[in-house]
Image 1: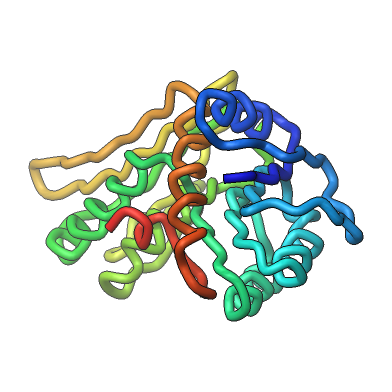
Image 2: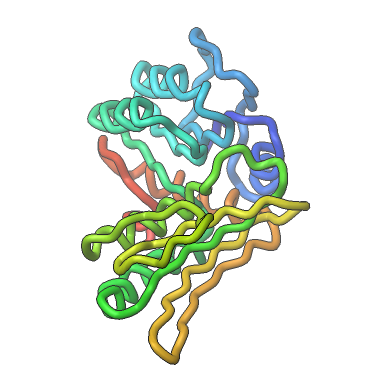
Length: 232
């Protein structure tokens, strides 16, 4: 599998390192993806920023190349562009590529279905002080899974004098130091508390997950896929 990597930051460099330990080949790495790129690859993996999205998707459509999107922080308009492009080529888009987080997301959905009526739900995410978007794409993914199970109201952070309302889901973002990534979902009931937590110790888990997704995506037809589709 010949891979084009978009993004030469920490995740792009980590992905390059992981690829070296596989039978795959990285054909090129871009920081800014150009409009007129002619190099071909079997799949593109994007760990860059939303500014590259338009050119990446146009390249994928022009060359009929699957695209793995591992960038977060997109606007609603950009999300619509991803959905429209997926009608023409295979696109894998996930808020997190850790295999453990994907399993956690499924468990959170099951817990919300069982406990959402009587337990309060809070989502807490922690990342390094260089992360740009908040809340994280993973926190949004976990929130979406909860929201799919019933009518909930997201509350982003808490301030002032305001009692918690029924069926709120608190979402809290912490930034500091070199935290790779930590996500916890708390289900707080009367006289009991259940929490499920995932902590990343290395960025390699995201790179390895993206490679698993890329290999799977190459066997799919046009469509918008998630890592849940890949694993389950």
